[in-house]
Length: 133
Length: 102
Image 1 (tube, each protein chain N blue to C red):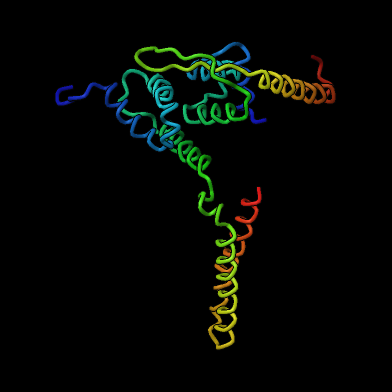
Image 2: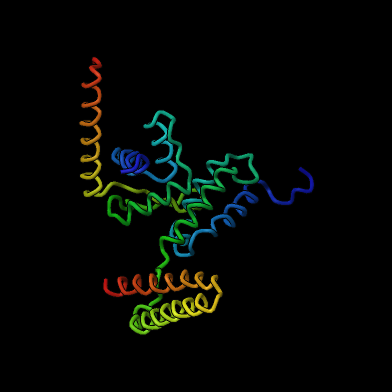
C-alpha cells in the first residue's frame, strides 16, 4: 500500500462524485448524497472504483435525467413563435424551390435538399403545437 | 405499470424507507431476481415523486451524509392496490385455465 497516498474510500468517493456529474446540477443538489451512500455501500470496503455495471447504469440514467429536464424550446422561441415559424416555413419553401431548380438544370442530387426542407416544416409544425399548449 | 415501479411501491407499502433499504427490500420481494442499481432507483424515485405516488417522509444525517426516507402517498397506495388486484385477477385467470390446483 506504499505510494497510495489516498485511502481507498476517498478515491472511490472522488471517482463517484466525478461520475455523478453526468446528472444535471439541480438533480445532484437534491440527490448526490443519497446516491453516494448507495453507491459506496454497493461497492463495499475494499474497492477503489465503482463496478463497471454501476458506471454504465449511473451514466445512462444521468443522461436520461438530462433529457427529461430539458425544455425543447427556449422561452424566446415560444414567445416569438410566429416569427420563428414564418422563417422556418420560408426556409423550407425556398429549399423545395431550389431543389426543383437544381433537378431541372440537371443536378439530380438537388433532391437531397428536400430532406432539410421537410425538417424545417416539421419543426415549424412542432413549435406551433408547443406554442399552442 | 413497470415491474420495477410495482416492486418499489410494494417495498414502500411496508413503511417508509431510504434508498438502500428499498434496494434490499426489492431484492427480497423478488426472490433475488431484481437487484436495483443506484441510477435506476433514483430515476424511478424521481418519476414516482413527480407523478405524486411517493413523497419524502423525513431526512436524517447518518455518517455525515444526508439520508432521505420515502413513503407511499395516498394516491400511490390506491394505485398500487389497483395494480395488485389487476395482476391477481390475471394470474387467477391463467391458473384456473391451466386447471392447476392451488
